[in-house]
Length: 491
Image (cartoon, rainbow, N blue to C red; front, top):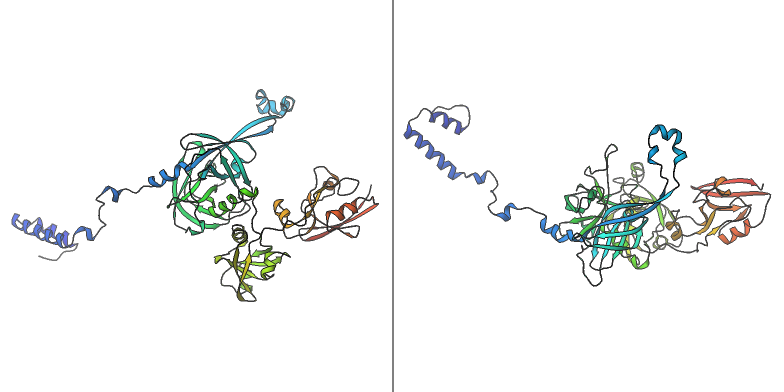
């Protein structure tokens, strides 16, 4: 047999056309022998032979967790000015619209979201923005049973809310919380919720990223990112791991500017460890988080080169509050924080999250670099100091602060009111709409330093100083770390 171009089987096939029947039988026998020696299973994967080998389904997981995911309907009321429908035309609107505007009326609005039963006695967690301002909240179970819900706790900073259903002695299906720090990028997850109000919907995906600092969603920007399809109405729904436990509460999606708000494969969930912190605060009536008592800035590439770090990660401390756990542990300005309990700290948002999710009263470790050398500090997770007492005071009388509200600034008061928790003194809480203080340019967060050369350190001193009439007011305030001084004549 002559050699020809092509594979061995192509040659055999070509020669078969020229042979008689006996030759063909011989060649087929040879092929059979080769087939037995080199079976196809050695070249490809085995074909599934049983139903169990073929079936790949999340159904058992959904059957176990789905009944614990609920729909939430929140009714809110707000004043709206309604125009007559007869004058909706732009032409009539231009000439007659204001003449026929109706007086503001109280109108009902209903928002839709999802929630998760996390305790069998009817404790439900959802997003704060789902129930914010609600006058009535109803929860509908997966079997269509409906309950009125009581809002036990609402936390704007984490966008979480805890509800209670009156189920008596009944035990509801619930989902157990899992340590969200055990998740890894690439893990499979399920998202369960009620997108667009169509009913309970399950989508699957993977963990796309961890410790995602998505700014503008909550005060604690630390999220699990997933590509499981999440849409409006999924807010407050469950992010489930493959062991059937809750690892996150679906909170937000990323949508392009031209989009309609639908999913593009980037969703964010509040980690279950933050959920646990809020749930554990229900008995206190408010969320009390540990407070480090120090602040700093994220290490950028320039700082990394300056401090000869291997990569731009960590937080360099620039200020430490007196009488804080940071001072007690020996944390100093210039220290670079690298980890908390051996968990890496890449930026300032991650540092805030790690501190906020620590159990109060527990000791934790902090790895820092000081003067180029590594050092481990031991700190106690403490609540922010509540002293001095705020002594909130709305300023009356003939003075430049008339109409403003001031208070003694403590770390706890500052955190509750969106103020700088590292400052002390008398702070302007509100300038008062249309007040003398507002017209003079006073702003929320201003720290009153001196009035007519008198140092103002407490509200008590402030009251005394502004109680006297003066021909000229000389005022110094601290705003954004800058001292501003002005003179105001008493007209």
